[in-house]
Length: 332
Image 1 (spheres, helix red, strand yellow):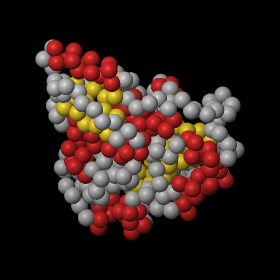
Image 2: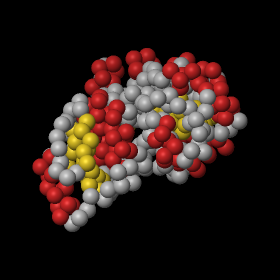
Image 3: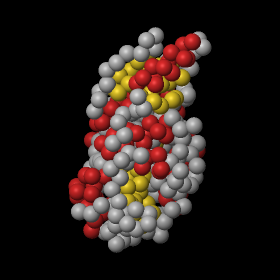
Image 4: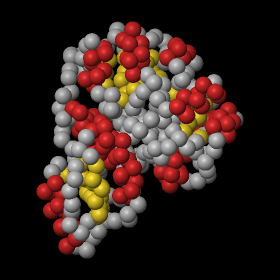
C-alpha cells in the first residue's frame, strides 16, 4: 500500500511500521523509542529478537542522545561519511531499549543519504529503527515493488524510487579507546575508513589487521550475529542458488542441469551468454553491481526456474561487500 510522507509519519507516530526508502535498501521503519512498535518489526520480518536494529537519525547532533561515549574517531567517521551508508556501533546509554539493541550493550546508528528519508526524520522528529523491509534471510528490497512482493501489499510503503547504493551499509564499531573494527562490509570500504581514521582496524586478538583479501568474508560467516546481516544464510532468493568462481564451471553446471531437463537462469559479471539459459549481465564494476545486485536477483527469482547460477566477481578488497552478500545468499 503506497502512502504519502504525511501518512507515513502519522503511521509511525501511532506505533505502526512503514517501509521507507534509503540509499542502501528499503527499511521497515518504526519509532526507535517505542518497544511495541519495534516488536512489530520483528514479527513482520519473522526476525529473531536477538538481532540488533539500526537506528536512523537525521543529524550527527542526535548521537549523544543514544550513546554513552562518542569517541573522537567516531566523530571523524561520522563527519566524513554522514549522511551516507556507514553505520556506527557505540556503547548505548542505559535508557536505550533492549529491543532495538537486540540485548547487546551497544547501539547501531546512521544518518541515511536519501532526501525522502531525511525529510521524514526531520519533519516527524522521530528516530526510526529500520532493518531491510523483507522477510528474515530473504532478498533485500531496493524498490517499493520489491517490498510489496516480499511482505504483501498491506504494508504501508513510502515510495522513494530505486535505491542508488543497492546493498546494506558498512558497519563499524568504535571503542572508547579509539580502536575500530569492520563488522559488515559495504560500499564504504575498509581502506576508506582507515584513511579517515588514520589507523588500521584492530583484530579480535588486539593486533592491527588489514583484510586486503576478500577471503575474510568466508571467515565471518561462522561468527555469532552481533550486528545486522551476519547470519550465515542471508540475502537469499527463494530459488536455490549456486555460486561459481569462474564462468567455465557455471557453463558446465548449466549444461548438466539441461541434461536432466531442469531449467536454470544465470547472473554474470560482465557481458556473456549461457546457451539455452536466461541471463542477466551486470557491469564489471563493484559500485554498479552493488546498485543492481538485489534487483537482478529479484528478477531471476521471479523466473521460477529450478536453480540460479551466479558468477562471482574477483576475490579482492574492492569486491568485498558484493562477495559478502553473494556468499551468504548461496550459503547452504
